[in-house]
Length: 286
Ligand SMILES: NC(=O)c1ccc[n+]([C@@H]2O[C@H](COP(=O)([O-])OP(=O)(O)OC[C@H]3O[C@@H](n4cnc5c(N)ncnc54)[C@H](OP(=O)(O)O)[C@@H]3O)[C@@H](O)[C@H]2O)c1
Image (cartoon, rainbow, N blue to C red; front, side, top):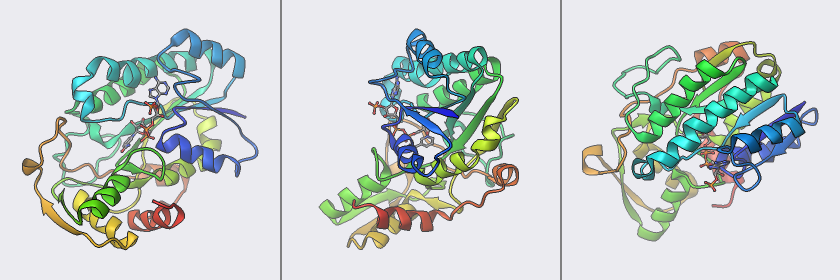
């Protein structure tokens, strides 16, 4: 089975690359913007015709949440328009489209984990562009799976873990927001979960959305404390409120995802976030 992965130099795409040698039944085709710019409909169609993927996993995205507030046009091109193109092409060329979405599509006023049936109300440009991509998929794709995930990190790309380690080593004292609650997710766990789910994904007959994050709940403060503790770095971390840490984009105060649907359908267990963080920090030299 041919599996095309777009945006494969990013965090999630790189984790797919690392795991690919363990899945000998699949022929992986890894691309990024230099080899396959997902904005370009004609080029993507040519590529699909030539390589005949049965499944396309779209890891390509504009993910700089704050910068996105000032770059609306390009954000929508990558996160929404290109996904609509992929969705159209998936119907035309009969492949299953796997799209990665985000907990940020929720406003964050819940007090219990969001299910796939809760109503999105995205607040930032990034979140709106990702939500509109989901809507485009509803209208344009026949066989597709959306995985909504949260707070991704990895040894690859840019992420909170790397930022905290760098700042902790440089400054020895940092402030981190304690009133935004979610779940850190190791991108390697998401990549593994998707590959383990591939037999069911390949048989998709409609569009279905599933939440996937690591298990458990944390604030960014808890996450930062765990990062420095598990890395053995001496650093004082002070909890602060969102109101005292201004960012361009508004983020949900609560965006924990309910993963019951994923666990029931795919029959997979999900690792606890702190255990996965420990695996990531031990495996990789930050
Ligand atoms: N990061 C998170 O915390 C988080 C949370 C929830 C959901 N997600 C979603 O999870 C998915 C994977 O995220 P990630 O953190 O792995 O992202 P990432 O590290 O930013 O990787 C995205 C990749 O896509 C590439 N790309 C950008 N524009 C492209 C284009 N037009 N054509 C082809 N490739 C393009 C990027 O290249 P450049 O680097 O050169 O731009 C990069 O290699 C995304 O859909 C994201 O929205 C992420």
